[in-house]
Amino acid sequence: MLTDFGLAKEVDESMRSNSMCGTTEYMAPEILLSKGHNKSADWWSVGILLYEMLTGQPPYTNNNRHKLQEKIIKEKIKLPSYLTSEVHSLLKGLLQKDPSKRIGSGANGSDEIKRHKWFKVINWRKLEAREIQPNFRPNVSGKDCIANFDERWTAMPPQDSPASTPKDGAYFQGYTYVAPNPWLSEPNKESH
Image 1 (cartoon, rainbow, N blue to C red):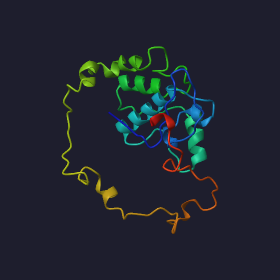
Image 2 (image 1 turned 180 degrees about the horizontal axis):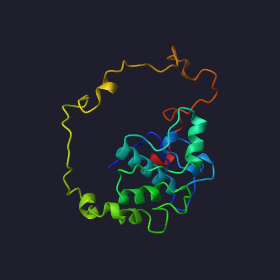
Image 3 (image 1 turned 60 degrees about the horizontal axis):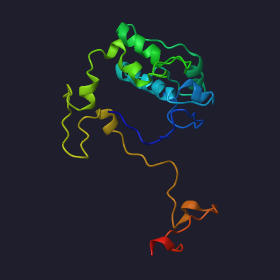
Image 4 (image 1 turned 120 degrees about the vertical axis):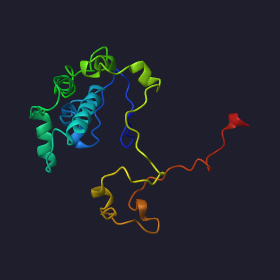
């Protein structure tokens, strides 16, 4: 199970969104092109994540954000030869530039992906019922345990944000909007 609630938007199945937020490396071409997007943009992101999990890095990288966006929009995906033909097929389906042709974007949605030959060993019913034991379960010795992170990350000195910390209530200096205080508003007459 994967979750990231840092940036999330709930959208009705039939709707399209025009929001542009998230990590550029994981954004679908239609998001970068501001064409409006739907759930198939999420399948693109799953493809990027799967590629990164299998190879150690995302398929499109560049230190220059504009060049990175151009690569995502225009560059053909390069799949390493050491990956199986089954995962090549799945990655090509998930990382299809045309969202209408992307696997999972059709009427069968996620079932189309679940039926892909790369997932043939997965018993989805047992997985969803949490009846399958994972092959690896990391040892964790408390909520602050860092034993499972590479030392190159844990040895880095902590850095504060480059922005200075506001002092003395100056958090919203220059803003004119003041949220109404629900405690001071008139009580709901129906509740008496």
